[in-house]
Amino acid sequence: MSVQLTVVLNPSGDLDRIDTWIVVDILRATTTIVTFFEMGGKVLLPVEDVEEAYSLKSKLGGKWLLMGERKSLPPPGFDCGNSPIELLRYNLRDFHGAIMTTTNGTKALLRAAASSGIVFAGCSRNATAVVEAAIERGNKIGILCAGRFNRAMIDDTACAGMMVEIAKNKIQSLKLNDGAKIAIATWEYYDKNLMRAMTDAEHALSLKDLGLWSDVEYASRIDESHTIPRLTLWNNLPAIMV
Image (tube, rainbow, N blue to C red; front, side, top):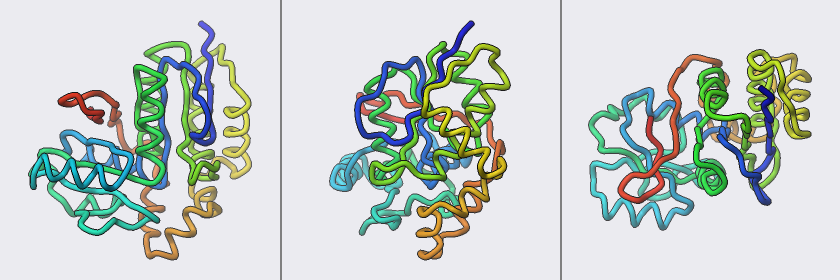
C-alpha cells in the first residue's frame, strides 16, 4: 500500500484533505497536552482566544483548570501556563478537565480539525505511538507544525522530521511532499539529536530567557509516552481526549 505523508511547516494557508493529521507544537502546547493526559487529565477544551477561555471557565465552574499562554506566559487569572513541568504539580484527577488557549498550538489543532476527521496531538514524547496510530487510520497522513506566529520553526520541523523517519521505517512505499523532505533534512542536519535542534531554536532561546528552560529539556525527551490525545467533541465543543 502506498502512503502519502504530507508535512506542513506552518499553519497558514489552506490545508489539504488528509485522513489523519498529527499536530506538532513541541514548544509547548502538544507536549503539555500529552503530559496532561499522562497525569490523569480527563478532557481538555482547546479555544482560540483568551476571552473565550475566560467565558468558558465562568460557565463550567471552578473544577476546570484554566491553562495557556500569551507571549509564553499565563494571562491574568489563569491557573497555570502552557508548561508541562508546571502541570506536574497538580493532581489532575481532582479536576473535571481543563480549558486551554495558546498562541500557536491550539489554533493549529482547530485548523487541522476543519480538514480531517482525525486529529492527534503529537510531540517527541509520543512520537512513535502517534505515528503508528496515524498509519493505522488511512493512507493520507499529515503532520501540521504549529510554528510560531505563522512561521516555520526549527523545533517543530525537527520533531516532524523525526516522525517522518519513523514512518519511513514502517512503510515500504511512502511518498513525501516537499515539506516532509525539508523536515527530515532538518532532522538529519542536527544529527538526529532533538535536543541539539531545540537548543538552536529561537523559541527555545526565548523560553530560556524567561526561566523556562526546564520545559525545553522535558520536551526533548523521545518516546517516553504511549498516550495519544485525539480531537473530538464534548457537549458539542471541540475537545481533546484519549
